[in-house]
Amino acid sequence: MNYRKLGETGLMVSEIGAGVEGFIGKTAAQVQEMITVIEQTGINFIDFYSPDPTMLKNVGLALKGRRDKFILQQHLCSVWKNGQYLRTRNTEETRNAFEERLRLIGTDHFEIGMIHYCDSLSDWQTIVKDILPLAHQLKDSGRIEHIGLSSHNPEVALAALEEGSIEVLMFSVNPCYDLQPAGENVEDLWADEAYATKLTNMDPQRQKLYEECERHGVGIDVMKAFGGGDLLHADLSPAKIELTPYECIAYALSRPGVASVMAGARTADEFRDDAAYEEASPQQKDYATALARMPLISWKGNCMYCGHCAPCPKEIDIAEVTRFLNLAKAKKALSDEENFIPETVREHYKVLKHHASECIQCGACEKRCPFEVPVRENMKQAVKLFGY
Ligand code: SF4
Ligand code: SF4
Image 1 (cartoon, rainbow, N blue to C red):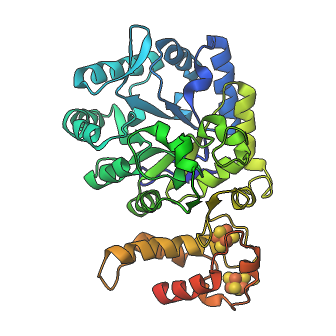
Image 2 (image 1 turned 90 degrees about the vertical axis):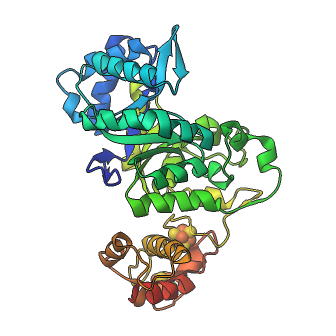
């Protein structure tokens, strides 16, 4: 298993994380087995959006003696009422539900307190007023180590980044959502009308969100990487081409800022399958070929960080150079400063083994790029921006 930094939290999370749906409706023995498989595969990151008390209790039992091997992301504002899940912004309900989660899991803290499901700016304002003070109290008292927010809306997520309290973002990332503009209704992201005309390239606000997260050290953990499973079936996917789970995971892990993908799994075997991503071949992870075949969707000229253009005779990691170039260019567009490149981007570029200045302009990469990215021009721009 590979591990990545979760932004600047200091936490190292497994690239493949575990969503909680696999534990719901299972017996204590089944949950025990699943937690054991998760541990064996090296998955160390578990998200709990559900407040189902039976599930939480079973997970608590399964974690006995090994709690510290896992990074637990528990949700704030997702409560259990009258036998079902409910989203709330009531401070006291949220506080009580969170204490109950601590009790059921049998721990004195969670690594991440994830403010649950905010898709509108007005809701974000309510959170700022009623929930963020509670989240800070929990953090100050050691009940949580870091504050997170889950959202499907890049406009809301960008507003949250600007506010400054959010250290972890749980965000829906997949190649179809990424084409769609910001909106308050997650259903719109899958509506037939949203795919009725030709779509070109990633929505700029989403691109900006990923880049801002990387620049500001806010770690992204991904939900809905498979579009709720629809992306895995040509007849259900709005893209009309089926993707494999590994292609979806590789796509999400290639976006800037992303640390981990909460892959869906309902059984121990499905957790094993998700973790087997780590042993998959480059061909199995190659999402670019499928993306380039999608009718009515074009990423022409836009680097998807897929690595399809390799190998470069000068061993330049073209996807990485282009990623840092885009991060630097986006920052330049926002700044008049001469020294506009953030230090982190400059440092990341510096430690690459080979730099754009080594490009001999052979053009071999462009022949292999499925999206007609002008790599040679990008290399020249990178030299201009970084100096080498
Ligand atoms: S054009 Fe430059 S980056 Fe592309 S393969 Fe040739 S040397 Fe590598
Ligand atoms: S230049 Fe093309 S092939 Fe290379 S990483 Fe970008 S999109 Fe992929």
